[in-house]
Image (tube, rainbow, N blue to C red; front, side, top):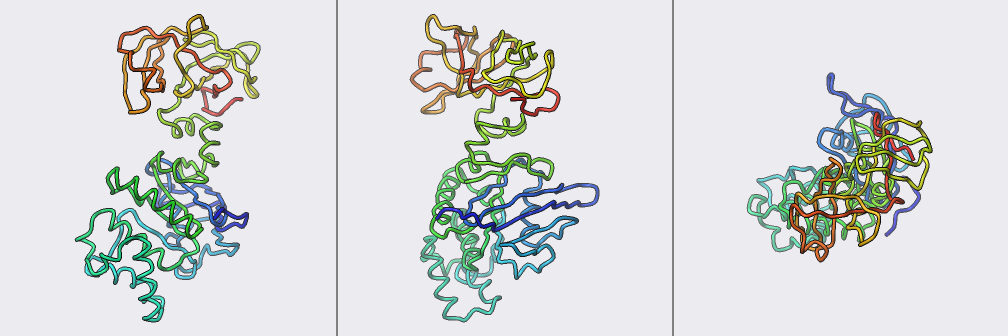
Length: 363
């Protein structure tokens, strides 16, 4: 199911402080119904506080929370139609899987027959039917995560909040659970708000991503939009792996030429905000650098590190005193070794220009 144009969730000017620590600062964003929406950023940027504010676990200092057009800023937790899965799973260790699933329904006063039906449906969906009589401490990490997810899904929430739910799993289980969550999202078409500091999770799962810094959203968009059109060096450094190469530069008189340690770089787009002689940063994605063909204009470089990653190889080179990372197809890198000279070039249509002082995009 694709997202509709109807807004499922809207945060407007949300602020929250704990003493002198400001967790959220005028945080605003909206999520369309049926969307898989990701809050992305490193630890302590406010992702968890944002989710807890939506769920009603944390009162706001200022701002407004709306769920399907209704103001729930001060509404009790129970009436919001929201369910949250925590990083720690938060299962009841003395209850069986069946009882963990049934508990929230019993609290809501659901009848015994419907509880039994919904528990068995949820267990089958999450492939946990054979574990219903087990206690959580006898389950694997992936199974415990599925129980935590099932306990939220069984309530049939309008909005599902997931707070770094895969952090405690190993790499294989994280991969499997990413696929499982996307499958469940497609199956139910529910609105999901997913908080993570993991770039791979954000890019592989999110239909739309909000990049957070210091308690606010600095840019939101699809994975492609954030990768191709970062608004500042912060976003450019968070989206894309390996991260964007940043080269110190001075803007030329024509506002299209940049003096850099690699020589003159010409942009295909004029600088919109800035002036000649101003300090800038030229950003080049590692995937946009390549080995120059014979006779092609190129930049001299020397290889100092080679990192094979299966189908691609990351090659670090020294060029003009700058260290650049280049992503090459495995076949192109098999004969390379540290110390080799390697002429490199790039597509001038794909460079990014940022103001050195503030990090803001200039083109």
